[in-house]
Image 1 (cartoon, rainbow, N blue to C red):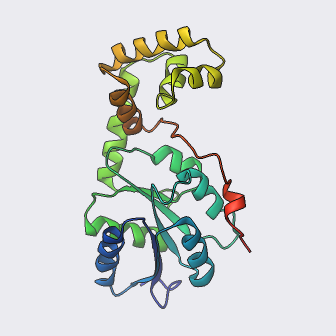
Image 2: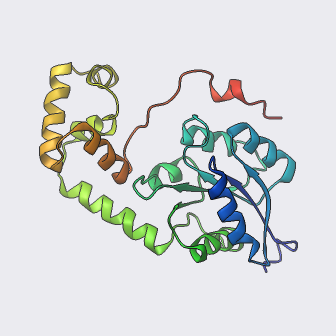
Length: 228
């Protein structure tokens, strides 16, 4: 055990699904050097347990409440005593680059093995790693990057593709384009990526890790939290 964690590595699990939380907790309880100090199913309960239990590591699952995940991640890490945060996401949702840019310490897909989740805890707690991913996760992320690059989208097509979950009018407003130009870009994107409709394009953008997810407008996360 690392000398910096004489009482075990303190872990908190933030996931909206009770079964997922119970599963992770069960996995970690099998390890003598890992202690699950608390579980959270909402953004406000996560804030409370970070303050109350000071975990070393938080497993943050994408989709906690309806807050944008990256905004929540950024908010957690503002605190000077913030824990290390490892983002957990479904297999088809590549958030590795976004998570890293917002300050996460690692990324893992939720279908990885118990051994890899345990390895994530120990690597983050005991080693000076800048950003942790399992070899399997890294392979999936790298493969998606190669596929995106091979499509040879133009710079503007990539911007449009990133906002593909929005309607054409909204995309046009965000990128200062006409709706006709947006439609032309989308047609080209479909052709280059061999997709048939918007739903397929959205799923592909998620897998490539470039999708700008829709965000809620009210309340802001600062209004929701009272971080003391």
